[in-house]
Length: 442
Image (cartoon, rainbow, N blue to C red; front, side):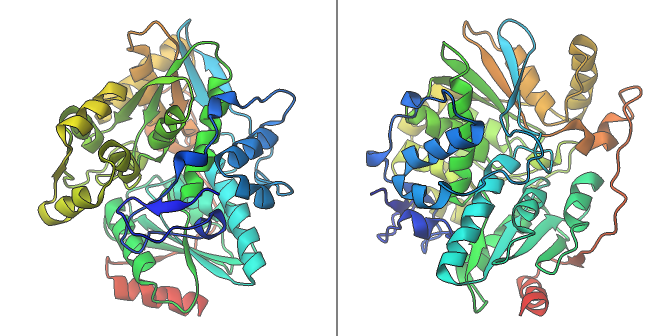
C-alpha cells in the first residue's frame, strides 16, 4: 500500500483516504508518496479509453487505493466538452498543449475538478462537512469554486490579493454567489494570501475539518501528472516541456512524471518579472524578493509552495532548507542538488514589455492570440535548440486577459463578466480573517 510522508521528516504516514483531505503535515511539510509501489507510468495505454477513463487508470497506477473513489465518479462534470487536451502544431518541432477548455478556462480545472469530486465523496463517507481554504494568484480560486460550489459536504473560502488579478479572474470567483462560498480580497500580495492560508491550515481555529485545494494537496499533482502521461503518449520520441511557472505545481508534476517513467527530457520554466525560479535554477539559491504586479498575474509569486517537493527530491529532505529560508529569507541547494536541478530544469524571464511584444509577434506569425502566461512558454519553446519536440503548455484562455490583449491586438474584444459580485475586503490580519470565516459558516 502506498503511504504518504512529509517532506520535512515527520514520522506519521497517511493512506490515500487520509491524504485526500490533508493540508500541511504537522511539521508544515508537504505530503509525498512512497514511490516503491508506483507503476512505471510509461507502460500505461490509452487505447480505446476516453480521457476521463484514462485518467482513472493513472490514479490507480499511482495508488490502487484510489479505485474505490474514482471508479464510479464523474471526474470532469464541469466540462461541457471532452476534457481531452488540445494539441496545436506551430512548426515541425514545437507544439502547444491547450489546457484551458474547462469551466474556468484555465489548466487548474484539470486537477481541481477531480479533487473536488473525490474530496466530496470522502467527506460524505465520513459524514462530515469540510471547510476548504484556498489562496489564489488568479486561476486556482475560480477553479476550486467551480469544483465544489454544488457540493453538499463542502464550504469554501478563497483569498485573493486585492487589485492584483485581472477583473475577469476576480469576477469568475466573486460572481458565484452561493451559501457555501466566501471570497476575501486581501490587501496584500499572493504570498501574503498563501502564508495566511498555511497558518490557518496549520492552526485550525475552527471546530471542523479544514482542507486545502491548493497545490500543497497531493491530489493536485495526480491530476496534473495525468495530462503529462497523456501528452507523452502522443509522441514516438521523448519531448521537452515549456511551462509558465508560478507556484511550481505544473512543473513539479512534469518532474514527478519524468521520475516515474515518462519520456520527458528538459523542463523549461518561464517566469515574469517575479523571477524567483530563474534565480533559483541559475544559482540554487531560493531568495524571495518583494512581489511585483505584472500583466501575467498568475506568476506574481515569490515563494512557490510546490517547489518544496522538488527540493525534497534533490536533497532527500527539505527540513533544513526551509528552516534556513525562514531564518535568513534565503536558502541554498547543495552542489549535488544544484547539479541535479540544472540537468533537467532551465528558466527564462519575460518582463511586461517582452510579454506584450511576444503576444503581438506570435499573433502575426501564427494567427493565434496567446494569453500573457502561455506566450512566455511558447516563446521559450520556439527558442529551444533541440532535436526532439518541445511542447509549450497553454495554461489560460486569452479572453481572461483581454484587459492586456485588447489594447495591443486589433479587433480583440475586451471581454468582461457583468455579473453581481459578492466579496469582503480585509487586511492581512489573520484574526480578522478567521473571525469573518466564522461569521459566515459557524
